[in-house]
Length: 449
Image (spheres, rainbow, N blue to C red):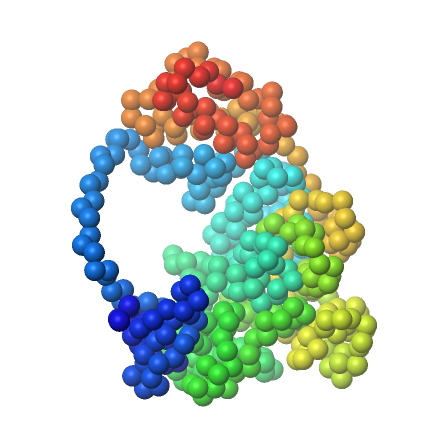
């Protein structure tokens, strides 16, 4: 039975004839190699075969008129978040923090900033603002939203993958992503000394052009050794086991070197939800995550000792269950140690956002960041919340044609939440105001709470 057509980076196009293990694996017939059982994640569907049942007629319901851009914004507000495209318009009460961060990035070649705040205080929003500002300034920006399991600090490869795949830089009037940047760099970059991964990458890129397998490899996707060998690519596997903090810092500083050769002055790396490192049940994974974060901070602080890698001495270390430690106390891969920094100078600014937790691991993170580089967020004054609420009401009224608050209800909505602003925080205020406007619009008889 033909279930669809897929494309594999090595075997080419093939026909799906069966599925296994609840669809996680596909049995695919390839013209050259025959039937192969292959993970679903390793292929892309290029054609789906429709089922035997006739499609039912779909009746489209009429949409109530209104400003649909405003309607889209309201959908985000119901979750307590601000759409990325409107971050600048919805930044209230953060002038002091923004001034500190932007001036530091502009005046200093490298550095680290730690943003602390409780849930809902606007840490992610502030990172969004800084990311947009930095991109408009012509800096490269990469971001990782951390979590306890997948994009976790104890999985350096996954963090690297997220930073690279989210990377953006504005050159002229165009916003380039990672692939655009590497294509532009291939005829410009001149490595003063070979880079273990980037030097062969550019060699293969010039030779093969846009090969999806090559891109997946350098972007940190999981590529088996057999796939690289089958295409004759002389590339080292990017290791996916935990103690590889050195390898991925080495890659990020290599990318920073390329950016500088292209005239991109700085590389801004944003790490959100860094407190997830404190929430893990296994001490060894907390330890590895903390070591990776310490390495990233050391890179951003341009520590000269991170340019060294005494491989033979590192491999003798037996102090750790996983990985090897150097004489400065930085974690290295025991299989293939690398220096953390490819080459000085480094022009990386690392901005970390986290919720403080009363644990030893939190204290270790704070100890690696200079005290004058720590921002401890406080809730904005009531006057800023009032501006925010008025703007929410204005957008809500644009979103739904014919809806307008009476003067009495407007006054209630504008003032009721101010007494709770310091307790609730920005996210909950946005969510609460939007929900109460929904109650009023649907005329449930419910007064704002």
